[in-house]
Length: 333
Image 1: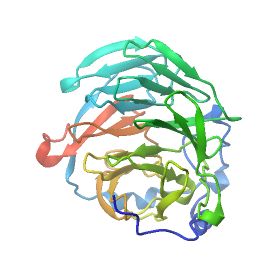
Image 2: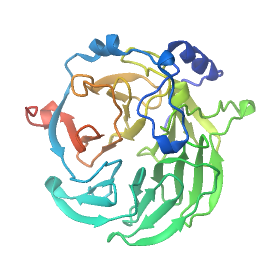
Image 3: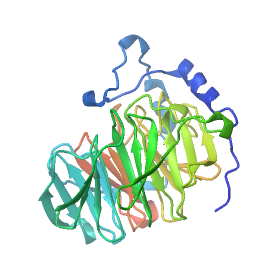
């Protein structure tokens, strides 16, 4: 994969600029330790909603209703199965989005992923659990940090990457649960600005080429790391316009299309967009404020094997499905 072409030498300046734009965020989780800002530092995004009132190549073609309380985590397996988890329950969907199995789980995971062998990695706020296909817990990885808040998991052939929003770092494990390193710590000598996490959103994903990409939400952009913790490239897009990210901390969630294009989701002004991940160039809008009219945040996004974009919408307790118009039906009414 080509090395990135937008390497910021002083990316922390973006963060300073964003203080002038906003220092607030939406939908905080009380147990996370992140503090709710006062009314005097909230910002009004309503005047920017019309920017995404444009025709797009995507249409909403369906909805998956798991029928569970407070669904928070979602992932797609190599076999195409869709997993949705909420309060004490996980549901698995197969072809045609038909429910395959439903089983009880502990509490409510914040994030999850599934390995090629079918092992489920469930991330709770302070630890990780590994489950087999029947939902039986096979292992528990205890926290290695003080005051952790685990928000995202990605698994490669040999390693597991866990986003810890509480400690503003990515934890790199081997598949046996041994901690190998902490990625994203501030190191100005090596041009690593440090991951800024003003609110409990810190996401990461591995693209089809096997590259680890991490959101730096406080700097409103993306960073690619090697497995030795070194930073390969980075880009940041601070803007209320469609080509950038607004507020104090965005994007909240990322996923990759099958061709390697980056899918992002934002809170406040809820927008799902597509970027060229290498250059950071904005490409197009998938869905915006017409589909998500109230200020909120999505709980997760994913892309399935059909290249459908899945959005876990807490307002509806459902997974909303978006496809290219030429690939899907007319929009639901």
